[in-house]
Image (cartoon, rainbow, N blue to C red; front, side, top):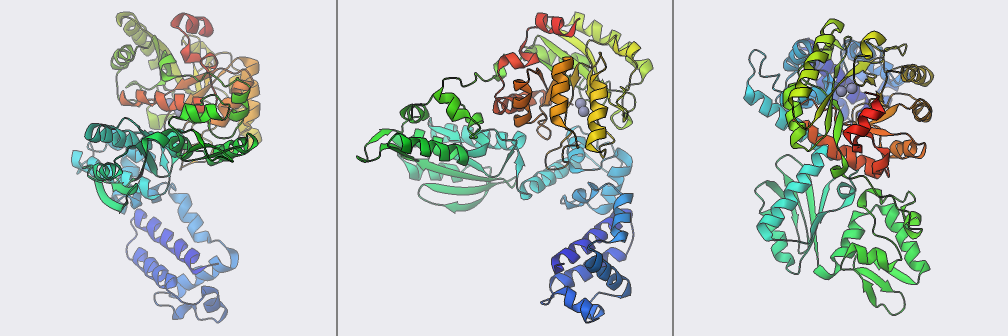
Length: 570
Ligand SMILES: [Zn+2]
Ligand SMILES: [Zn+2]
């Protein structure tokens, strides 16, 4: 057991006690923790020699706890504390400007238990309604969260995308660059991204470097070189740029987009053909004569390959498929004709059904599905049975009034622990479609969870299984569930599986989408939007589908309204 690990336990106790409002003790635990971190000897030796209490700040009580940690690897006291409070509260105190008392109030008054919920509450302006808070507090909280998100390593695609786009747009506006793109995992639209990489093709590298660091959003220039620079944006995000000559832009873009595994396979293929490939181009191996490099298409063609979309460059069979001319024609955002997962003010959403319908018309959709939470999800203002009938009427009226679109009335219905849906069939039959979801009882065994979901899928009224694995990126692992069985059941019973497009979910993920497609399952992409702006998340759903090799034909919401009505039997 390292000193650092023991200290970490003590720090956590201090944080938890502080959230609980305990006085003095947190300071004592932190002091002991700090002194343990600074010891130049192993703490286990202190224990062996019976000298724990010689460490400054370590009294009898703390010494006993340290022995327990070292001897058993655990601490009962910490376990008990953890059981009293949701684990996510610990992330909340990490947010700059948020103290433990605020965390407790947010928890008690708004039921906020983790960073994700805090962010949503601030975005939806629910915090300013609390006594002593205002719009400025929300601003500070959002800024703090953003800093934190970028400090902890990987960033969600849903955020990285917009930072990348902003930098590229700025470079185009300020420098007039036309050979410019994001690269790396962001260009491949991976669900999480490390740093943001930008590539520019220009024969004036010095100017590119200058324009890049002069961007007013840059808060710190980490490094500025002749052809490479790194900066940090105000929000804490690191952006790296690289400039290459215009005639090798294609080769560089291919090379820096990766993935590494994809590039390794390309290199072996090149060798087989007596060629050499690198970031400058494709060369004849002996003569060193360059045969491609200006564009990516040219690079792939030189290797006898079709151009392939960045999203599938993961060495998952795309090179072979390209050689055999059977690359998939991936779905595009423009193919999408509707959304099957939207929350309105009838439960915990921020926009009314009218507003959602009008927004959907603007997007050129033919239909939009309203799916508010069901009765037992009290934290999300689930709709009581008695109110649902009235809501159905209301939505039907709005659908008729709004020209050019059909508003489909659905519900996101809780799948109870026994697999029974939260509304009875007598109510479900009046809905246009039903989305089933697991939002509680996550800690089941794989067998029980799989059974629970399969039971729900066996209900004829269940149309779509929402976020099938329940993962929340960087926060919660998928629940233990046998995805293959879920996919097989979907195929057998004709249930649609959701690709939830929320940046923190993207569930099913790329690999499972591909599996589902291979089994003939149709995917429904749903944004799970809780505001009009979040309807934009459709693009991340589509991107993840593309990474899963999905074509238009495997996706429910590429179908026309007529076809959807037929599929839903309405
Ligand atoms: Zn849900
Ligand atoms: Zn939802």
